[in-house]
Image (cartoon, rainbow, N blue to C red; front, side, top):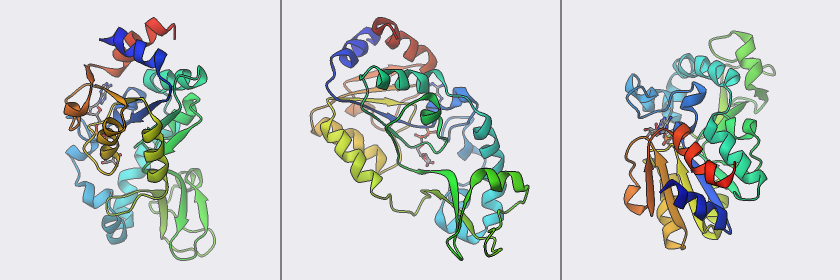
Length: 243
Ligand code: APR
């Protein structure tokens, strides 16, 4: 089956990847819904929703700042590097990611659609001033403070539960409509509207391959499901391609 996926990649006219937190666990960043996932010990509505952020920014940053330190020092995984190599060989046109860790770009991928934004920049909700996350991390403050107006209302430019996705969703749908191959890596494909890109790919004629350790909500939409550790799956698919 892995050799079949390699053949599909080699022959694809417009291959696109859709990734989730599972591509970053090998980089030391926990995912959300695995047994060791982030949502095991905390209610995502408290720390990953707009209402939760508004209600208690200190709780929000208590949860995220340590993870952002991990992300700052993380290295790309085999899956990140594989997708970047495919793009450099013209075998991958875009990576659509739900991740906010920036590791696809750090691995060398250039066309990356960040569906859930990133923590790269914080924006003051009082005066609109922006701050790079590094400054917030280096300040050591439990809640980042606006350098312009002093308010403790700095919100990261990530998509939280309750937010609408911006124009990036339209860009992703366009990539999917042009795709003849969609590789889904490391996602439970449980969160819409991103998960809806998988049936859209099927409807517009793309072959769908899901590579994941566990079953996903979209396995029935896939032409092929490769079950296992991404590090192993990616190596087995890359081998016949000489990557
Ligand atoms: N190899 C293969 N699969 C893996 C690996 C690995 N090394 N590590 C984790 N996985 C799989 C898990 O089995 C799981 O099915 O990756 C999947 C990750 O799924 P989730 O934790 O649900 O993450 P994701 O799909 O990215 O979540 C989507 O939900 O909470 C929101 O905004 C958050 O972007 C996130 C969205």
